[in-house]
Structures are given as structure tokens and as C-alpha cells.
Length: 168
Image (cartoon, rainbow, N blue to C red; front, top):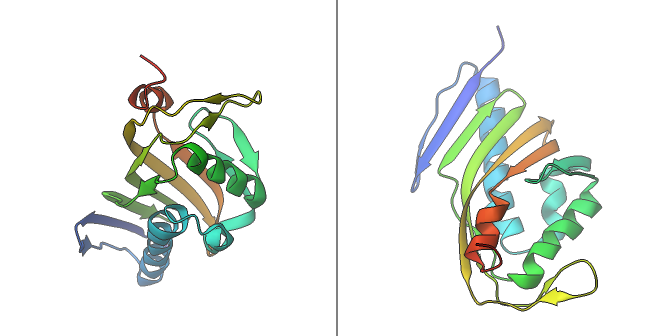
């Protein structure tokens, strides 16, 4: 039928692959490897010029609060903003990695420390609390060829604010 599902679950360096189609399996494996590079290297090390390796120029990004942005330049600006107040933000693990057709889904753990002033959007800032965060997150991507054309980001914003000391 041409439809293959690949599920790659990782624990440490062990990888298990199940595929209905070798071609689909190869494509899924490549997309999941790209996703690992995206989070572990490009995002965590702020290598923004490399974001185009995984994101289409016209990417649509749906953020955890439901708002959407359009275009890679806007997405890069938004991602840069996360590092202003938590410059050590990092994703180092994808415990669950799933691919089916043109969709990938990964879970991860995003960590960092609120160590610098946080811009509030009205020209003011919130003083850093020095508190660290450790958030479960998930990303679903829709792929068109070798890059995502839509990315959905999920994490608990209230839990994030609680962990960095800005919410109860």
C-alpha cells in the first residue's frame, strides 16, 4: 500500500526501528535524525543559520499558547527570545521519537535557568530569579520533502512560569 509507520524509541543510544516500507523507513529515519540535530545542536547551541536544514522558509509554527507565526525569520526571532533570559536553555534528549508518513513527533526535556532579565513586551523587564526549569515538551512536525512546513510546539507555560518563580 505504500504506507509505512516507523517508530524509533530511544533509550540512551539504543534505537529500535519497525517499518512497513524501506523507503518510508529511510525517510522517517532521516527526518528523526534531522529533528535530533535541530534540538540537540541547532536549538541548544543557537545555530540559527542552520534552522533552514529542518524548517521551510514559509514554516507555520503553532506555539503552546495556540498562537501561530509564519516564516523562518519570525521563528528564529522567537527562538532567540527564549535565550535572552535563560541563555543555557537546552534540549538534550528525545525519549520518544515517532514518524508516520509526513509527520514526526518527539518528546523532550527542555532545561535552563532564569539568569538574565526577561523582557515583558512593554519596554520593562522581570528580574531574574536564578531558578532553573525542567519541562517536558513535545513537537509535532509536518514535513514537505526534507523540511517541516508546520511545527506544533507543546509544553506547559504555567508550569514553566511556576518553576522560574513567576507564578504560583
